[in-house]
Image (cartoon, one colour):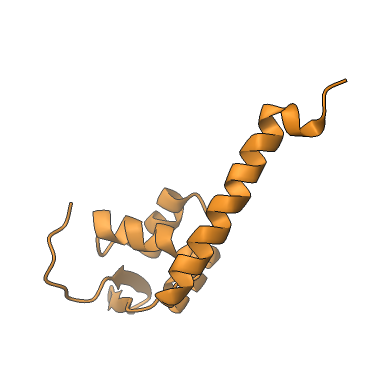
Length: 99
């Protein structure tokens, strides 16, 4: 009889847990919570997109993207429109090149 450890799904879960643990440790040293790296990556690719579009790219609901943007280190926010109601998250100025 096969043991649960022999199943690919179990092994993938173990890889996922190990990766998440190592990622959390590395990101916490930078003051970033797990999940915020996706926000930072998306802003690295296309800076200044509306939060609703950012949420769609990340595959989350707008309130989740909003919470991540509020909590992410170094995120600048610009208001747009006549009422200033749309936030455009931006990375702070930096000297290294974009991909």
